Length: 640
Image (cartoon, rainbow, N blue to C red):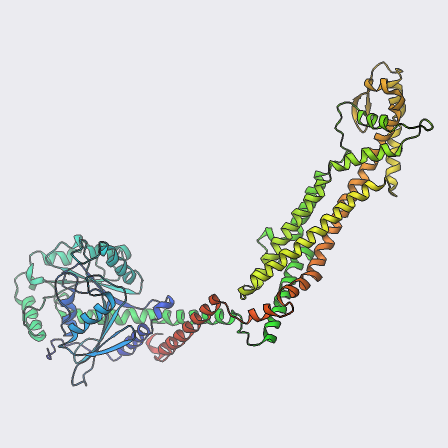
C-alpha cells in the first residue's frame, strides 16, 4: 500500500488555482448559488469507477456488493514531492478525521454510515477525502453513487430517482466537467450515465470518457472510441483495472505492456491509453476550466457580497432604546402620510406609476363621476298618467282658504317623495369611497412598517377604527344634507326662477287642452315631450296647480342634484385631506403608544423572520468575504 504506482507531472501554476477552488468548496460558497469548476465522476453501477479513482490516488476505496459509494466523495489529491509519508484525512459535517492508507476504506465506510445510515440508502451530504502524497496528480474529483435502476434488499424503492437527482445537481452546472466511466464490456449508448450526461451536455463539450476493463473486451474497442456514437467531446482514455493483489506500480506496468503488445489494443493511439494519460488529461482540463471560470467566480462573489450587504443594510436597525423606537415610529408615520398625501390628495403617483389601483385621486374622481351619473337629471316621476301624482297630493291638501293659492305643503310632500327615491345613492358613494381609502391606507401602512411586523396588527386596527369614524361622519353629513333638502324649498340660485318662468310659458297651451279649446288632448311640452292630458279634464279644479307644482319641481330639481353632487364631493375631499394631514397621526399615536407605550416597546422586539434574515445575511457576508479573500490572494496573472 505504501508504494506509489502513479507518476504525474506537477505544474506549479496549477496548485494555487486548485487550492483556491478547494478552499471555496470547503467554505461552501456554492450555498450562495456560486458554482465551482468541478470534475464529476459518474458511471453505472460496477462500471469500474472506484478502480479508476484508486489508480489515480494510489489508495484503496470501499468495495462490496451493491452501491459502494452512497454519498458524494470529494477527493482532493495533492502531490507533494517533499512529503515522506502520505497524509490522509476526511472532512464531513464539522469533523476532521485523520486516517491512513490502510484504514481509509474503513474510515470512509464509518463516515458514510454516520451520514447516510447503516443501510444501503444514499445521502447528498458529501465527504471530503484529502490525500497528500508523492507522485499523485493535483486533482479534485467528486465521485457520485453508481447508477442502479433496480433496488436491492435494504435500498429504498426510489433509489434510482434519488441517485439521478444527486447526479443531475452535480453535472448540470456549466462549470462541471463530466468524467463518464464506461465499461468496455457494454454498449456505450445503453449506459445510463451516458443518457444523463447528454441531458445536460448534449454535444459532449464538457464530457471526458474513461473506458475501464479494456483487457476484458478488446474486440471492437478501437471502433467504439474512434467512431464516438455517444458524442464524447473531450475524447476517450482507455485503462486497465488493477487485478488481485497487484500493487499500483505493478498495475501500471501491466497496463503499459497491455496497450503496447495486445494485437487489438495496441492499435489505439497512445494518447488515449493509460492512467498516466488520464491523469495528465484531467490535470490539463481542470487547469483550463478553473482559469476560464475564475474571473467569473470573482465577479459573482463580488456581486453576491454587494447584494447581501445591501440587503443587510436595508434591514431595520436593532432598536436598543425607547428613543430609537420612537424615532423609527415617527418616521413610519411620516412615510405613510407622505404616500397617502401623494395618492389621495395631490394626485402624484411617482411611487407607483404602473399600479392604477393606487392612483387615488383618479379613482375617486371616477367614483364621483359615476355618482353624478346615477342621480337623475330630471325629477323622477312614477305615475302612469301625467301630473296625477301632483293631483293626488293636492286633493289631500285641500283646506278652507282662498282658492288658487298653491299649498306649500303639497310641494314639500312631493319633493320628499322624490328625494327619498335617490337618498341611497350618496350613502352608497361614501361607503364606496371610504372602503377604497381604507384599502389604500392599510396598504401603505403595511408597506412602510414591513420591517416592523409587530406593528401591523395594531396599525391596521387603528386604521380600521379611524376609517369607521370617517365613514360615520360622512354618513351623518349625507343624512343632514338630505334632511336640509326636506326642511325647506329654498335656493338663491337665479337659475331656478329663470327655468320656472321658461317652463310656465307653456301653461296656456296646457290650460286650453284641458278646457276643450284644443281638438286633441295630447300636447307637446319642451321639458316632457308628448303628453296626454285628457284625464286631467275631470280634475280641472287642481290641474293648473298640479302643472305649476310640476314645473317648480322640474326647475328646483336641478338645484337639488347640484347641491348633492357638489356638497358630497367637497365633503369627501375635505375629509380625506383631514384624515391624511391630521387625524391619521393622532389615531396611530393613540393606538400604538397609548398610556403605557406598549406599542413602542414591541418595536424593540425584532420579529423572528427579521432576526432569521439578519442572521442569514450576516453568515452570507462573512462567507463571501472569506471567499473574496481566497480569490484575491491569487496573483492576477492566474485568472486575468
